[in-house]
Length: 169
Image: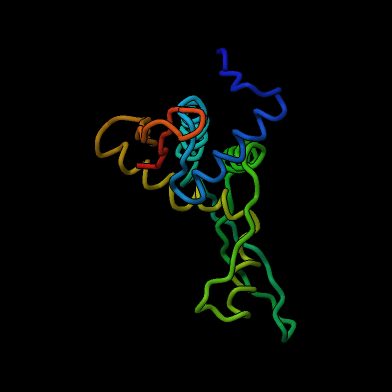
């Protein structure tokens, strides 16, 4: 499959597309040119499909844990299955990490606890929020794909490039 060159060398083009796909997944909407939007749309839909196939593929594991009183406790933990772990790593290979930000009404200790639990927030958002939503939609409607929408905005002032808003549906 031939990709659009977008007037950039390969390394710059791939970095730009990775950045835009990451921002699309994190924020849900980006504004870009039509040619870039079509490339970003293709990559985002591919990553969402990978996440949809493995979003609920977990394994329940029991582990032995020693508590403060030196007693052995049995803990039941939900782990990723090997297939889901491979899918997460494949998605992590493409997406950039966006650091979590502290909410205005959130205390520092609560933010640190939330930050400690999530190592890759963009990947977590994709697997925990976006993929289950689209999987449910695909089961209801009986169709896959079509997770993003391109809305034409008009020409950009200066170079008259066609601008679009790319958003997750």
